Image (cartoon, rainbow, N blue to C red):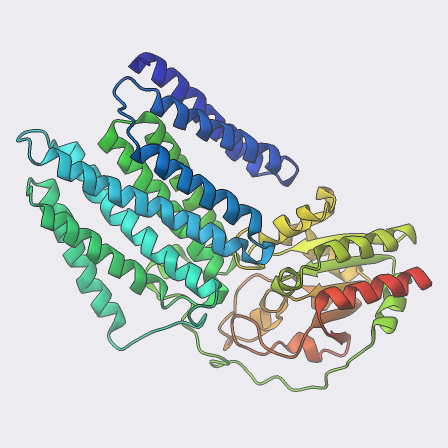
Length: 461
């Protein structure tokens, strides 16, 4: 296949990626967007293999078969609760691939004097550095989400100074490559240093900030892929990597805004390294526990109910039961909506994915800014496994680690029912005054079991 024909097909791939990204931004069209993106990637792979300069030995088919098998089995078997880990893992693999390609290209070009042009050397340094940071950081994010290591921030004395020294050494190695140092050990040192930096970069980040770090590392991988495109003279890699980098950066900014964090704080502030309780005021009051029968009556005689999903809903896989409960309430004339906080769960859009799996109508999903004005007119709010995103301390307690973070104002509703297994704190590790609010009732137990009891209770009324 000629270069002209290849570039024409690559243009098709680029268009598919743009259309996929457009559809993925809308829940109602996200599934179609996923298929369009997959089709575009399939076109890119086939066209690359058919290129006139491509020599296919046994390694490419074997590697492709192994990768496809692992990807297919992993995607089919992964639970919805583990989807953030899967995203982190796939993202890290992309960054690692970019770093390996940069090493291979440097190895292939340096024996040929004059072949390592300035633009290529810059691209190699950037893809090696950014790809390695993305790979190592994503693996730590995966380990934290999978609870292979503690989710709490891990810090050590002199952390920021040590990171600064390491970053300076990595940048120096990158500059050496760009000015013409054609020693392979420098690239290896750059990759190893960037891998260490990626680990140290993510270790201080707590579980509450995982949505931010996942979107940030996603942007890193896109930038690394784009730089790799310049190495390989691949337009499709340059454009698709730039799209991923730009969208990931915008998403990071949006996540930072949703958590009241500036991008500077995200990049340099060891964000997430808060201690439990911190300077937050102690929460005093009486917890009011109720039964499923009590809550069934409250819901059945309400005019408007808002469901607030959280990570507890994901863990219990209660999304289908929640949809069934909403159907029963709507049969009784109750208006049911869902309040979605931007950082609920462990990755951006986590709650949207869960509810879409249960075929919850997309118009019923309300973003935070849209639903907050409706809470004063809401009869009952049903909080399922959410904690920090509904914590009023973010508005009222300057000493709280989450002070200033935009939240769902569920405490303004007439009645609030919180479904939890226990009184344990959320990712931020702080108490929630909502739980002792006189208008709040606590329904303890597994989320799915509790919701199914509510379904039975509502049907009986």
